[in-house]
Length: 372
Ligand code: CUA
Picture 1 (cartoon, protein in one colour):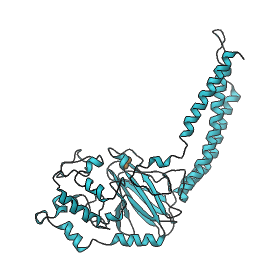
Picture 2: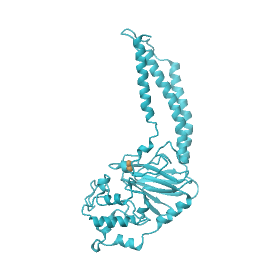
Picture 3: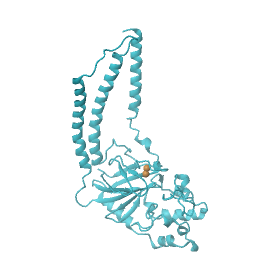
Picture 4: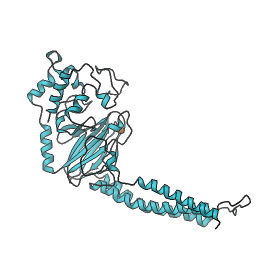
């Protein structure tokens, strides 16, 4: 080997190692970097590689061996390509390779071998698809999940309960989700518990999720859905069954008479909720009676986050949010009266209320943080 060829081989090796290093950094456990919420539950990263339920585990059981099969095939193919490129490269103007036309044995080989590999891989793949699509037997928690620009609504079918963004489920039990959307296509994704499932207007898609243990799991919309797609997050909070039942009972409690009076007081008698038309979009009823354009606000204070689970539910955040929500979260806004959508047919997000006074903000914050 000449000196020139040696150094070319060395630079090829260096380039190869650099490429491998770049690829491998993508594999590092950087799940925590994805967390942009103010506060995040401790313990589990938002990662498909950390299965915390049987459905996510089934997917991983398929993914991990297939990944290594792909690695082996990738190394062989890339290795052979690099070898051929170096070994058979042109060494001068007259250095033509031997001219051949086809090789029946080779062609049959590289057709049959991949076909056999794919056929073998199809067996566990199809089995997993059917397993994940199986409806659990018996009485299970069933939740209709509706993607909306840009938050999630959860209707608990058997409990008659409507809530938003933070889904509570019993651990150790399969939960059936019927996933749909009202406006555009979204995608419901809690990587630790299950795969993605598109939320499509006019359709209901089945997804089964289950958490092995109580805990909190982060998720987010996984289908680009407009201005605040990145701000359409969610949490799943898994409880022991008894704690879950207690949560349901707490959520079903109606507002107190004082709270109802606060909501219903007309603008002329100083009612702030009616003055700003909050009930045109938000329900204050645990069963979701009333408007469902924005999240149900009954028991808002029992949630950790708001606005598509992107902000901690704190006094300061609410104080900033109420008069000027679009500054904190980009939304298609209407004029402050809320009767002229920026895009016809598209429901506007929470508008700004520039005329809202500090005293009104205080009163609203106190009221909302009292809705436990
Ligand atoms: Cu909803 Cu992206």
